[in-house]
Amino acid sequence: MIEADGVTCRFGGAAGGAEGDAGVVAVDDVTLSVADGEFLVVAGANGSGKTTLVRSFNGLVTPDAGTVSVNGTPVSDDLVAARSAVGMVFQDPRDQLVAATVGADVAFGPENLGCSHAEIDRRVEDALAAVNMAGRGDDRIAGLSGGERERVAIAGALAMEPDHLVLDEPFTGLDEPARRSVLDRLRELHAAGTSVIAVTHDLRDVLGLADRVVGLSAGRVAVDDAPRAAAEKLPGLDVRVPASFDFGETGGPTGREPGEPSEHETGGPTDQ
Image (cartoon, rainbow, N blue to C red; front, side, top):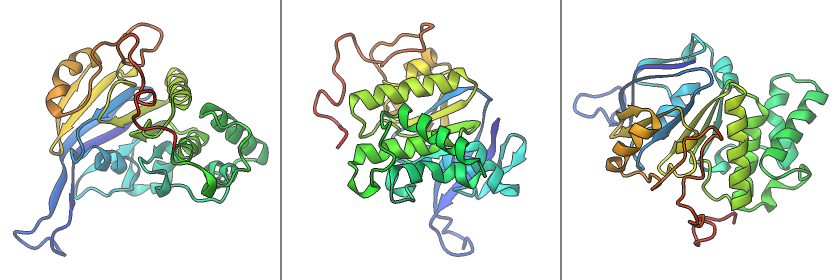
């Protein structure tokens, strides 16, 4: 379980917190928990504080006030444990790719966990297959498109097999086959008991998968509800909600109207 209690994060301001210059409050006294196995969507417009909040879940951001605990241990007490338990996929893959080739990058996390060679190979193979990049372990990162780099970043997080997986705008730049593959993998992870936290301003792909939706506005929780109820409130937060969606047993929808084309088909973000 991830537990945030009264988390406040500020940026800027005078050194030492001089009076009258406390900086910009990005997250403002947020308290919430993410249960084991839960699929949580954190929604909000740009600048709402959603990325800063989830980066506090594994110590990438240190709160100015409040605490975050992962599996009962404060993040500040054991950063290694927190970062092993909470896998993070950044919105910009350039922020997390560390190796020269695809396979080496995906293997980086399992290697640092001390996994055996056979286990590392298995994790890399499974993770690359999940993002439609099977057999491309020898490809050089420098030669990949932006969408392909994002898929490698997602594969690197999947290879860690974390208890909790956080994805920040995970579908930006993905073509349709990769988007569907990632959605399928998230559905499988959720069904297997991994908690998934999807951070987004566009809920069309993930609303039907969610157990709960938290909407942020100006750093505060403005919505915290089941998906159907949340969908009625979220448009006021400047986020995109599908016009129709299915909450059936199949794990939910693409979140589009029947026959509605994807962003890839309409000239939106593609795997370039």
